[in-house]
Image 1 (cartoon, helix red, strand yellow):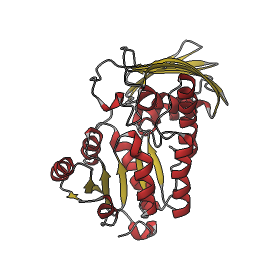
Image 2 (cartoon, helix red, strand yellow):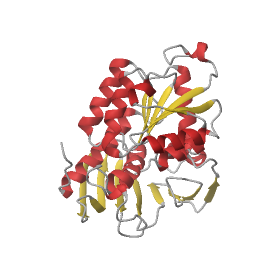
Image 3 (cartoon, helix red, strand yellow):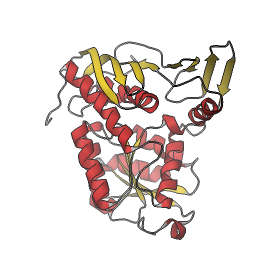
Image 4 (tube, helix red, strand yellow):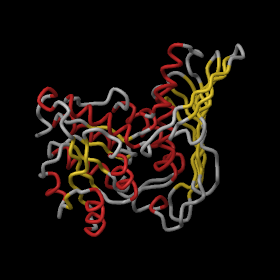
Length: 333
């Protein structure tokens, strides 16, 4: 059944996924599919045939000899799970082939590149969404619902960060060639939280440092948005907490670590009340964004109302400004 058919025709048809890439995140995606109704991994392609074969065998999928072979196979959606430098290239190829695309973060290296991806999505009338998982978690949804019914006022400050020191020296996260670093690997999450609650960025101030491989190993950002200010940090050479703060006139929220896999939040009201939210998650967390995307495919939607393309553009704008301040420019930019 092709993705061009209407939602009534598709009903609750099983969404057959093609996966580009066969590394850790692709395995986590496959594990998450076990928690998504009516979805399965159907095809895999990777530049390394051996890893594609192993992933396909693990999840009962077909290992394809080429990207074109996978895109021409009987799949309903494509998940891009490669390193940063190839996200846009593979997204454009999949969209041009008529496939809806769920692309790992960052959806592109810079705003210009993301704009080209979105232009193809519009031209081909195909769904494209950046795989930013936090807003789909039960806790995050429960927090938004609670604040609608028992508000603390408009959020005016977002503070969030994470820094880790367990990244091996030869890990791809430190690769200049693959266009990685702390900002695009970790900071993109904090940028999401800022634009999700505060709106579009107006200006960004950044200080940080580059490591021996040429990518950023630590960055501290202050950004001004339509509705407030964000304070963010990300790093690959320090160990830092991973909680988040949302502050408003009548109270504040702490999303406890790890905030990007949210399970607990504390709301402290200015009148002294304290509300604890506890919402465990299952399946590693990628399953929630995947289930949302599957529903969008079935309905024939061209954009997620939750993880909008405007938010992706706003997030990468923050990253572009931060990298420019650090003098970090990748090959071809």
